[in-house]
Structure formats: C-alpha cells, structure tokens
Amino acid sequence: MNLIMKSNVFSLFFLLFMVPITAYTQDKTISLQDALKILPEFQWDPFLQTGTFYSSGHYASFHVGLKGETSFSLVDGYEVISVPSPYMENGVIRFPERFITSLKDAIDAEMKRDVKPFKVAAIIIDPGHGGKDPGATTVQTINGKKITLKEKDIVLKVATNLRDQLVKRYPDKKIFMTRTTDVTLALEERASFANGIKIEENEVIIFVSIHCNSELNANLKKNPARGYEIWYLPPKVRREIIEKDAFNGSDEVRTILNTLKEEEFTYESKMLAVLIMKSLDEFIGPVSPSRGAKEEQWYVVKRINMPSVLVELGFISNPSDAALLFEEQSLKKYTEALFKGISDFVTLYEQPGGFNIIE
Ligand SMILES: [Zn+2]
Image (tube, rainbow, N blue to C red; front, side):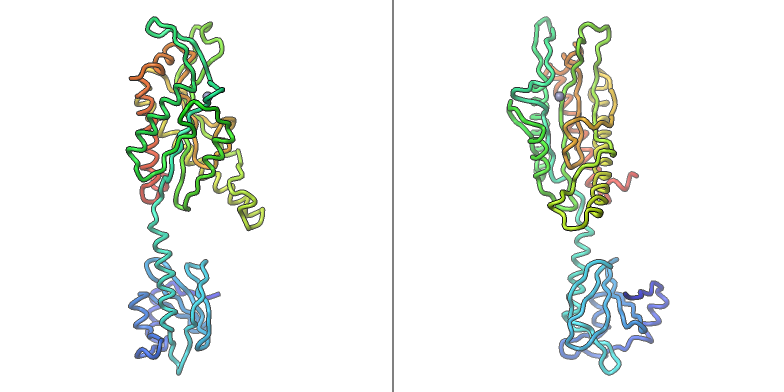
C-alpha cells in the first residue's frame, strides 16, 4: 500500500526538498527531471519510499527496491505491471529507463481506453413468425377487395426495407435480419443468433423484433382495438447474461455482474422503446393511435442478452389498421418511423459519455 499525497503544496514541497535527484543520466537509468519530461507529475512519500507518476488523469505507483531487482507498479489503482525497480544510490533515486517507458506505455493504454467511444456495433431486425407460423391472420375488405393479411408477410416487408435503410445509413455497422425469407424460425434460434455475436466492451448490439397485433372476434365489436405499441423487458426478470461456464469468478460476483448488466440493458431497452415510440407518434400517430411503451416479460426478447424491444405495428384485425399495413405507401411510413427511432438511439448512445449526459 502506498500513501499518495493529493495536495499540490505537499507534492511541490517533496519535489523540491525531499527527493534526491540525479543530476545526469547514467547507464540505463534516467533522472527525475528527465522522467518528468515523459510523465509530467510526481509525488513522493519519503517515509514509505513510494512514488507516484501522474499523466493525463492517470497514475502509476511504485516502491523503490534494489538495483537490478524486478518490481511492480500499480497503474490506476488496479492494473499490476512488472517493471525493473527504481532504487536509491548515494542518496539519489534512479529510474531504469525501461521502468519509465513501461509506465508510459501502461498510461497510454489507459488513455486509449478513455477515448474508445461507445458504439452500436450491430443492429438485429427480427421479423416475427415465418414459414409454418403465419402469426396473426385476417381477411379484410380493402378497396372493395377481399384480402388475406398475414403478420409474417407484413413484418418481413417492413423488416427488409428497414434493413436496407440501415445498411445505407450505417455502412460500418453489422445489420442483420433473423430471417430474410418465409422460413420457420424458433424463438431459441432467434435468441442464440443474437447472443452469438461477439462485441467489444464499449459496444452494444440492439435487437428489434417486429410484429402485428390481432384481436379475437374483432369484427363483432363496435370499436375493435387498434394502434401501435412497444414492449420491453422489466428489470425484475434476471437473465443469465454472463454464463457460468464463461466466468472464472465466484457465483456471488457473477450474480452481481448479471444484475448490473441487466439494469444497463433494461435502461437501454427502455430508451430504445421511448425513441421508437416518439418516432411512431410522429409518423403514424395522426392516423393510428399509440398504445404506449410497456414493460412485459413474456415476449421473444426475454432470452436476448442485449437492449431489445418488440414493436407491434398495429392490429390487422382492425379494418383501418389493416388498410394502413396493406398499402405500400403507409407501410413505408412504419419503416421510416422505425428507422428514425433506431437512428435516434444510435446517435444518443454514441455521443461522448453515452446516456449519462441526458440523465
Ligand atoms: Zn407476432
């Protein structure tokens, strides 16, 4: 353990009076003055014989040892690096050149970590159902014609257009669809596809599942349900985000990490839901009503370990919504709304400091 003097007055005092300083470079050691050209600030504790170099908001501490000895330095209070030990000789402290360059490299690495921006690395668009599973199905009379509407077809159209727009807007991101054709796909397959994508610490993947609602016996009702809504997972559902096999630490630590990760995902999912909802209000709101963004735990994204939402575009059991979801022109508006909501999320997530700024 070392004591780090935080006061500049003290550090100046120690710099001037307490630290024996070599006047010139000797062998492969360098003086404190030369070291300070590389690492601009230094504090010394003469009682514990420990020192700390500071540079660009980072620091590396060490203890003096014997000449030729290998010692360690603690970088930013958590990373231990092995270094040739600084030592006292004739009352002056000598820094092996490799000691200073190792500290500089370690601090540079920390600085790189600082500037690594938050990034949405991938966007997964999940058209619900498909193949043998048509999802909701209704027959509606649109423009005098009897039309069979299938949820799986509508959501595939929207998802494909959305994918094309996202690819154009974000050539540097991976844009996936869980299915691009009319195939049957189990929920597990959708989840394991999404969870299988590897990302960096500063990155996130977002998952948007697209569906249509349907109401039983809607045609018997005076006011059949209509409108769009968005679901996201409530925080009370604890997922095994960090799997047992992939983690070396104790179960207790894993549980805490899972909780933290879950809270982060819930917050991000909610933000994604709110932004898509805002965009739907703008594009669709005038013609079909909003049913709100809601927390629920039964839907597909329960097993998806990332910010994820499920969007219900409208009720195909309702004649007015069905007409909107059938016409190419209005279907484009749904795509446009989803695209804007997702890109608003990307902009917010990728701004310096991420979401913290708006909290
Ligand atoms: Zn569905």
